[in-house]
Image 1 (tube, one colour):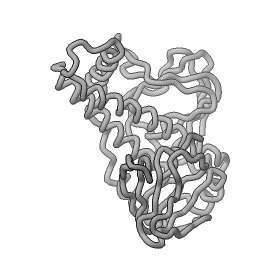
Image 2 (cartoon, rainbow, N blue to C red):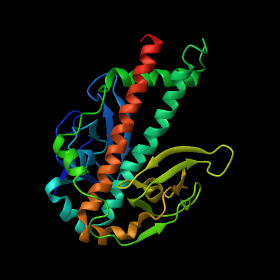
Image 3 (spheres, helix red, strand yellow):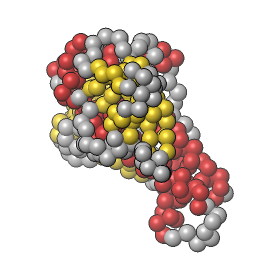
Image 4 (tube, rainbow, N blue to C red):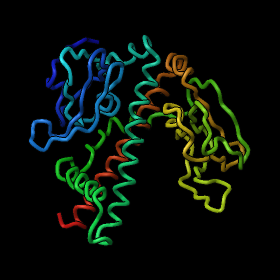
Length: 300
């Protein structure tokens, strides 16, 4: 691990760069841009003291997806290489949930953008004079289609192999529960500070469960995680999870478990981070597909 200092406007890395390092901001702030060196650059987000960035390169062997630019003089960064990551987690196990929070926030924000883009795509042609907010949204989606890659870079075969190398039920598990068929494991609207890992059986994920408007969103089988977004965001559960098989077996993981979990089963922590990374990668490709559809429908 090394510390580096940057002045306002200095590039920490550029979009498309290959990288093998994760960063934590010790002082100052960092902005993330698309096409920073171009006249039509766009700021995506920014991060401040204590926050992490660049995690995809370490977790997923993925090229940098944006330009990272120091926003203040004296911005100080801790650089953590992939080879140092385990030592860093042992020294500061709370950083595991910190990185999860970064990924989860990006997933939540991009989900909102994706839903808005889908709605915008469905309205093209229906209203000859879109309102100002709709017009701004269309302009943004067309801009993203023009300057962003058409899809996220593919994972290497080695990365995929490592992600699927073992069962989630292998190794240390602190709290494992068997649920009868039909049990509501967690309910939409609940504030519960934990996530779940399916060891055996299937779990149905529902919106408005038990009402006339009930919709089954998906079915998850063994070796899948769920509930991690609620755990790190301290927001109510967005859906209800129900055991679909007799003796559906689920591991319950709380934030305070990560230190012991990492010490005894570091592979599980790696799987959780890869799970979030894969969700973000898939969602990004879906968003880019919708932007392409908007460009096609609008003739741009």
